[in-house]
Image (cartoon, rainbow, N blue to C red; front, side, top):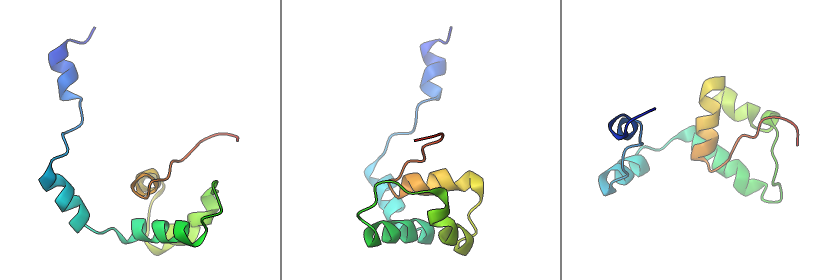
Length: 82
């Protein structure tokens, strides 16, 4: 059983006004490219991993980083069959 003191250390840090400003200043070219790709193809609601291969290669994004970049572009990776 985990006590409350231990559980509190696992919580995500609060988002402050300053944190949001810093995040907005730190532009990510890969995320911008993903968002641009979404704007160009708004009719699609499902993307396959190969749809972003050019972006991953251009920005040298490893497999471990991809889910974070997709999340930053407001996309969610779904594993398995659809």
